[in-house]
Image 1 (cartoon, rainbow, N blue to C red):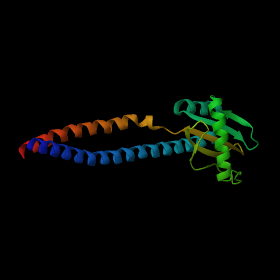
Image 2: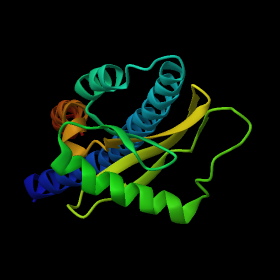
Image 3: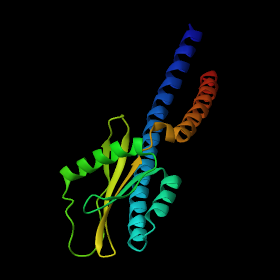
Image 4: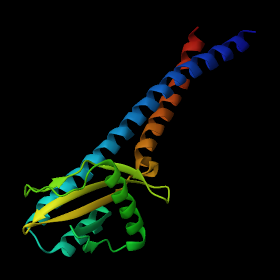
Length: 193
């Protein structure tokens, strides 16, 4: 009878403590992943600003955008006010459809008319879903260079859950350590009782 009661107490104590820890760890992990996604969005936004500043003072579009494309995995299309394409990403099959979808999305959500003030501008980051089920960040920039406007559409695929696998694994390992500690402590406490 006492052994049954000890087992029940042992199970109740361990499961209730681990339930609380599981909820706390889930909230911490989800907050951490959300923070990492916001940091990724801010990074894409800063990269667009850097490209605007770079392209305002450069005419070597292909080289500059090619470097960013290889280093950061972005897709680009640089075009004039007359829709003459000056640069388009090398992986055109994946990029062209998504860039077209992004430009249609931006066209409906905000005006893409030229600003006659002679200043470069940048839209806020847009998050959209492509036909292939992936999610992308997109930014449209108007660049005033050499007395004309150029338009740069920048797309970067949003990181999926697999990008945060190492963070999730850290939380899981901590959870396992807490489980082992709770099991050990509960055995000690119930033996003392």
